[in-house]
Image 1 (cartoon, helix red, strand yellow):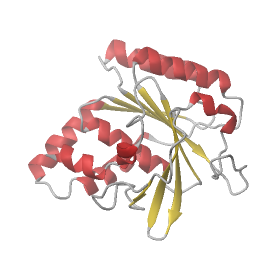
Image 2: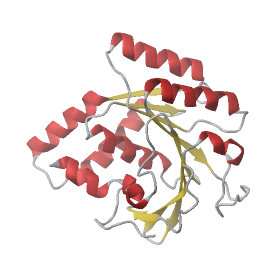
Image 3: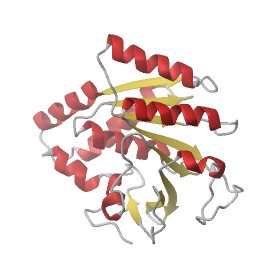
Length: 238
């Protein structure tokens, strides 16, 4: 039953009217916003959608602590599970905890090779094979082309979806999409790009790239600014 609640409030409902219907295994998706808008909370919402559908998620954060990332999950989980009994909440919590691993790198300490080592360790010693990789707060300030190529290869090899985040700034160059895009030079590596912006009483999620589609129109949904879950059970506008 809680899967239905997740389906109805998941930020991934943005894909209901898209051409491909989602990111898809073997692909990289990117969430872009200014600081404090909700990139991490949105990635947690994406992860919970997978976790509650019995998929394995590896959440990797740079410059944050396991405790803080876990707190994001707990806050969103509590909001999502409000309508349910204590027993139902505990069953769902057990499923989330059993299907998720969190790993944090120190600021400036992330390396693709270290990530590969962590993935192999989980496979060999914890019998854990990820379906989704969440990669939050990796810096795009240095040349990322080689790393993104390896990450794309990893997604295909592991048959997994990869979601990343990128920080935009007020003075970021505006690309063809009309939104600040700090990673335009790496666009070919990303199959899906999402932009978050604060609007009155909401955070607006806009789909900027949907695989090879040129027909995005005005595909957007408004999310709760605290939980980054869908505010109302409505069909995304276009």
